[in-house]
Length: 405
Image 1 (tube, rainbow, N blue to C red):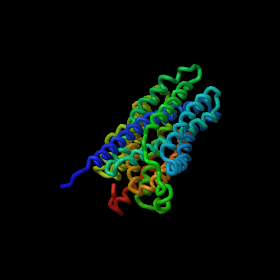
Image 2: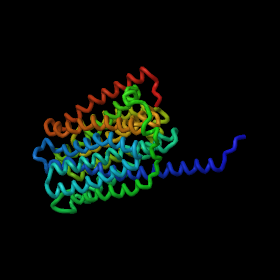
Image 3: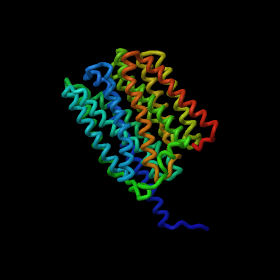
């Protein structure tokens, strides 16, 4: 008969308690930081349209937000690998505070380029925040990693309420400067997030993690990793491509800012609410099937958008787009976890995010120009091309090898 020593049992209990505390704190900060991103998406194109010297540049601030995400991922990963994730978290939340302050000053000074700098800082913050999902997986036992990753993403449900309501209730508090009070509150929310993150307890990287592991080129050539990157890129690219254009498209269609705010609120809730179940779905059915479902829902969102330009059509498009993103992106993230060893995690995860956000930036830059030049329907039709590419990649992978997801 095997006995379990009280010391071992106590260590296991403390480890589980620490894991749950970390996941809870990271989920709360996911909600707070997700609200910051929602503020940028809800107001970025509108403020850009107010300040820009050219209407074709109206969505440039949001595109620069995405550039900030892309450019920050590799440096953030290097900092996390060398000094630990907490250092990266603090630098990220500091950028979030700076983003809110600079955005408020930009509106007061009517400076388009200062506003672009503010959204760049916001993108730096958003990139660091997206590593929360991997940080949660790091502190969980292997069998619980998909659920830990999914639980942190579920914190974004509250971002779907906090962000749009923050915009709605603060945008007119400093007349005639629209959104100045909103950006000031955004900075305060980022500061609160930093305080909560101080309580996250993660192991510091050891010498093996800093220096060991396979070359990144070998890891990146794994078919499973390539598939994960393709699916992550397409899921995030299309979500950003359509969400960037939607608030401005609603404005062009004569719909109110409040309607756009509520549309984004339901979109962000739809992005994160499925996370309460996505981890279990991945465990039961495999990551590939969950990703495929997400891609189909994203295609359905574009199809619904083509049916009309009423508020209901925009909201339904944004809701389906949110659920599709969740299944696609969380599923692709779970695939990434299968492709690296523990000592390789920071490099591989940050490289994955760099490719995803770098590609997403291209779509974001195109979105505003296409919307201004050709209209909302063209933006929707173009979304089907990358979807088809991802579906083909999944089909080929399913035929050539049995997925491990």
